[in-house]
Length: 143
Image 1 (tube, one colour):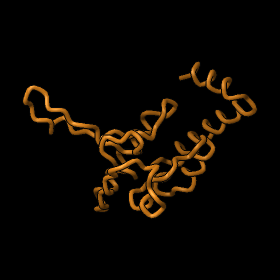
Image 2: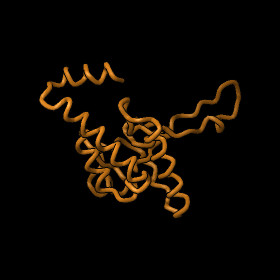
Image 3: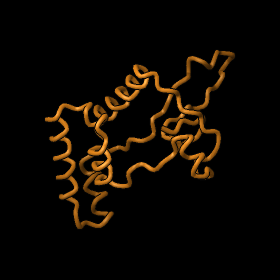
Image 4: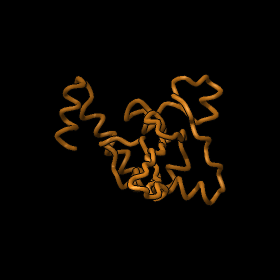
């Protein structure tokens, strides 16, 4: 999990705080999760984020170090230290990552997991062989 201040390249970002009219900026503090896209089911995405946070608190996991520069400038050791890595590049890769992650997969009842994967596999089949413009057009019509 890459955490950074004011860095739009990080998966988890701490946006800047602004002091307006002498007001304390602290109440503005928030985090942005930047890993979901418009095609994500917001309920499942938010549920996974909350479950991950609860797991971290319950298990006393350490807060990741805050990245202080462009992730593209990191060498391999620094990237590992900061948790910088690539997200899956396709829906098929994302489904493979979900299948390989026993913890996250376990956050869904088996019936929900099976239904979700079946729907996403059907999406892949529906756009197989289409060019990118056609795929984008289909998604734009649905979402």
